[in-house]
Image (tube, rainbow, N blue to C red; front, side):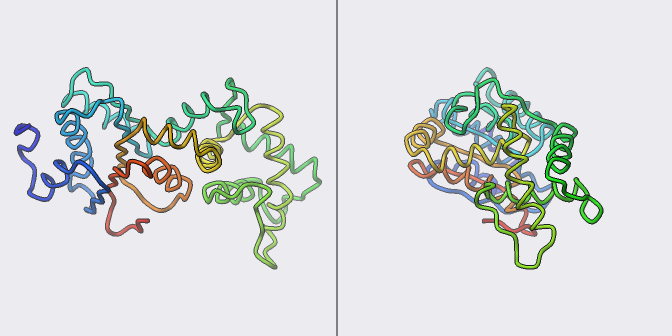
Length: 250
């Protein structure tokens, strides 16, 4: 245990040694936030927390791979799940696909597939793209999904032309995805957030399975990610997040 603390500042040591309860770490870029997360994981394992009860989430594949490599060096052979929010949600939906209207072998559309599907919808609805490009409409749909707003819940601001287009296109686009048993990248978070929000038993099961949740580089730019993090830390409120003080934090 002493080796894990070598080279850490007093504040970093305090965060690494924290066990039960919520934890918020605010520090600027390059200050060792990821190091705190990985050392805290090793500290929890050292204290007897089963590796399978620890869930570490970040935002990019590169960051996830770096975290995974660091955890492996600190706790060789321990199977701590480290990955991105999207990868975690994809795994979750494979198991509970039927709860959100999917088959477990659903396809994940990349950006090109998504735009192609949206163009089909716009053509079918005779929506002109002179004023709003498919990319602009896709960005607006993405914004709604990241705010956990489903097609039947979407309401545009009065007098907002793009919003009026999205209100027509969003439900039809989502229906096309459902018919194809497909999701886009943002659906992974939307469906997972909906799953946990509308299925208390599943939420409790996952909360109990992931007793310690750690999120690196946490920002409030995506409400769906907040909903997921919060849902997994209600019964066992051991949520630890790191973030930049210059960014807004929930």
